[in-house]
Image 1 (cartoon, rainbow, N blue to C red):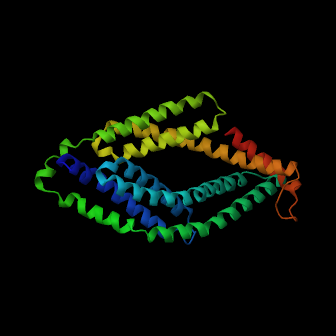
Image 2: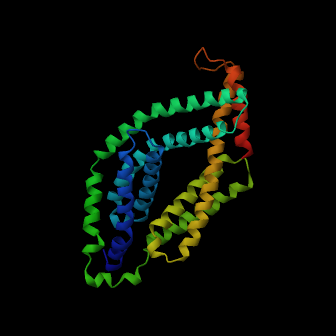
Image 3: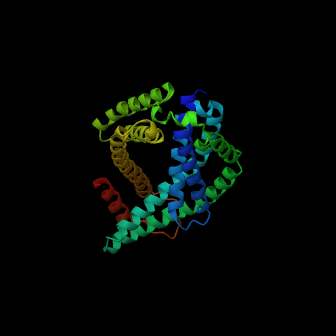
Length: 288
């Protein structure tokens, strides 16, 4: 590894990986109790940023090692994604309930909230198991060793003098260009408001580009801040659209099962009583 690559590792890769790896480990501590949904949220965000970093710095860390670490983080993120999505939908349903006085509507919202809470409760065991498995992975010690070995505090004085000349590798330049191209191509889906899948792909593309730029920020100069702000706003809007699309789809599935007499809920539940609330909630999401 040349001096410039070593500098990029020490000044950019190590601080970023260390910050979000520690953030991940701290967030995992609050997951088992399930008292605060923020622990699940922070775990998911830390996983996203770590996965992005392991892709961005893959050639500097070592392809095999980076891929192995990235897979372990991805396996953890896959479990936490649905749980976080449910936490967000639960919070949204509660927010809707606070604004409603119509008892016929409230009945349906209460049913939907209990349905979501039951699903979230069932997922908690999976989260605890995933945390236990992740902590036993060798990557925890491996990442810590890698951080210590490449920490900027261990750099020679000759290397630190190159700080002002820090720059991206060709691989990283191509990665950013490729992710920008993916976002621009996915943006064509905006021409069709009903293209749910296309909007989803665009959200993912925006997220990947944003996290890649964040990881490389010290080497990009101040211009990256403008791009990041635009990507944050875009990702936020696309995220809301995605949430509403998914929530509407799930409510429609339940309503369809009611009209088709295929509802598989407890026999003591009277679907007629909570249908108005579901229709109200679906229509609210459609208008947002």
